[in-house]
Image (cartoon, rainbow, N blue to C red; front, side, top):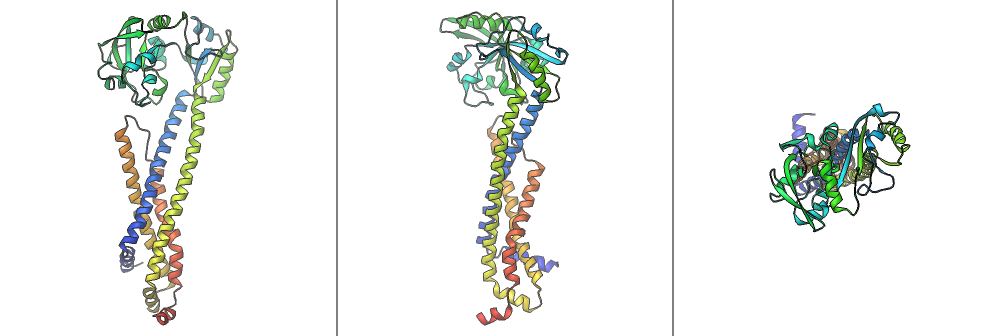
Length: 405
């Protein structure tokens, strides 16, 4: 195709500026929303894939048929667990105290988690953990960014977001009076801050960590019964599949006393299944965008073709072939589709940028597949939407148009 023909096509594309602008706007809005949803879906899937990979061999053990907060495992639970046949596959094991009372305590401050915005009572969940065991899981005690790990009783370390969101309540060196049942006031000193920003499993971790002895002491003051052991145990197996982890879990279930086993990776896979529904919605939206965008171009092009019938008649009378006229109309439609898709891509990227600016942590990502999808949509809009107007323009009969004048 010659340069003159391309120049002619571009000029005609934007002849009806308002109609063309409305068509481009409609496409851009649809594509922009599609890009945003696709990016969110891609980010969620990436996050879930990483999380599933990290938790594939992770198991949580509690007392049988008991909630984690009231579960009571014996002090020698680690030795019992190591008696299973495949104990050599255990890479890490950490018995943990679920420290109660911080839900009540959190009502007195405004701290909230970026991973769970607005949920202060959930943000202030505390655990008693042995640093040696925690190191096997690369847990909070290994991610100190300020201060140090607790070394004695009444010392705690806290999540980094608590230091910036609690009006100076949690800072290194600060001693807080932890109220228990509105009767006791136990002084707890913040000695360290741990990082959560790069942890995809941050929502599974505590926000306040202390020694096992401190956690057990606080529980025994808060609860109407004495806790001598642990609430639960985290176990990490050297496992390459969820099926293998399930086999190891069956060995744990055969132990005495009877234990309740939760596969963390299984819960993550359930979340992945939920994401499939979101992906289905996204596909449906994409189809709607294609239909709406195509109709917008079809309407715009049909209006243009109807008004330019005399022009097409003259073109045919001067030697233009049907396929050339058809191709020019399709090319005009492709230009509209591409411009709308590219503007929509920019619109969607802008929405993502705003979301990233307004959030402490974001999972939205623009992949090269999404960029190719936008490009394909722009071209597809033109090819599909330009056919009907193009065929109509190519079939014009010069003599009939002249008689109609």
